[in-house]
Length: 207
Image 1 (cartoon, rainbow, N blue to C red):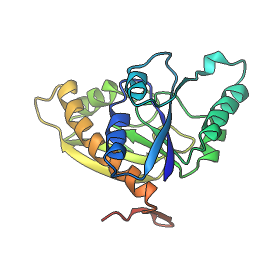
Image 2 (tube, rainbow, N blue to C red):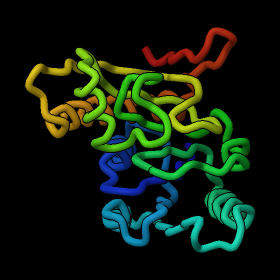
Image 3 (spheres, rainbow, N blue to C red):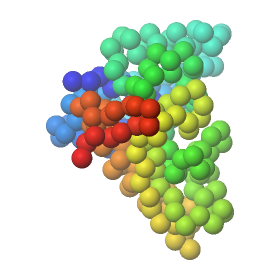
């Protein structure tokens, strides 16, 4: 049984998609805490309904990057965290935390990386850029986190069509459906030790 910490900045729909599968008995894990850079994001309300502890931890609360990093590591250690999920978390993770949880930290991104990833590509801005570029396909990506924004080994992607008359919101809605299907699948594979990392890349062994 894995202990999962979720980092989120907003609504927490991806957190909910994973937690629903955990509650249904499909993922052998527990969400042990939710951490946010926001003081009272909607995701906290979702967590509180299931008595999941929440923590507001923001760099601005601390005098130094080291103090901020140490606080994150202290909270993660307190809950004996095995896996971190970045579910709509908009801040960069400190390098020391990345190193501590190398290949044990997942991010979900609303585009087909490496396209439309990196600093500044988040939320509706991603979908606006996809449409503006005239892309015929978009989708979602789950990947391991490294020291760069939206970088690190890709685990799973799923495509959606970009329709000629799509608005950013319409595209976002379809991509979100994909996010809610692939993130729980990857989390389940991780918790069941069905992700293999080798010289060729990452292999999902859940099929």
